[in-house]
Length: 477
Image (cartoon, rainbow, N blue to C red):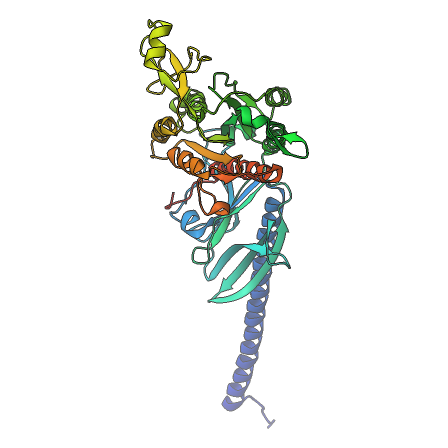
């Protein structure tokens, strides 16, 4: 009888166990291999998205023509945030998506949203946009630092920090704070020479109220008269205004005994009109006394009659109105209204014994309203009562939100007599200056002082125009 060989139950169990172990090892090897591969792919994709966001930020910031950093409270105020209709954005939404948010192709079209990184389970992105300081501790005006973080389970797993120079922007405005950091950049790439810039850019209307009384013919320095210095520095200021790349319309209101010859508004960005303005300034001559109030009156109505129809016809139009008054001495004349022009000359002399013999019938609006109701005459007055009367009219001319429409700026081209300037500045609610103890006027004692004052005035206009260019913030504005 032959021996028979077989597999015992124990051997079978051992064999099956061994096979199970091998299968389990193989399965775990495949499982963890696939998991590791998935993690590598996920990490690679996350890093790629972070780099993509960084590249978009770099390119957008570098070639923007206007740029504002937008704080978290505004950009993430609601699901869609607050978006200016003419402005594009790149940043993180309330839902955690990194997007480029742009206006529609045509007015009224829905905004176009491009997702650079959508919110994913377990992955968060953070963006911080900050100022950059140079080695001297001063802020570099056209350089921003943006930091992009990829965060997983509360830990930073990706980080890119980059400084980028904004090459084309005329101004960069930082609106974020430490407690409310900037998480988005508002930008436009529209070139100022493109007609579309006119659609998004505000306009400025400016009256230069220039004293040309007799004292302006006195020498100031190096053989130059005060009027010659005024002309030189005024033209420099006109060129500065033209360099701002906005439509800025300027009217010159020269005054002495009266201010009977205000000019039309000329656009300093139009070479022909700018030259006409320069020719008018060069043609000024000094004579007469100082009727400061009449200069203010003429300038006020020039501005009011110009901008009031614009505000009424297009409430959304962004405009900036400025009245710059340069005065060379104490106010010593005023203008009075005669309610009828039927008086004889002798009657007028009895009524107004201090009348100037150069008085004329005015053809523009008197102080009280916008309708000519009679003749206006000039007479002596060694105080600023008439200026105060006009100042009340300037203060009452307001936007619907209660803000004063005309922003006055007072320069005293004097070496003494500052009490006169204080009264004038307060009367018309003029800009206050930290450089002069927060008083409502700047003193200019020489050519350099005058140039400095005109620089400050140019900056005042520029800052206001750029403020109007700012995208709407919420909920603060």
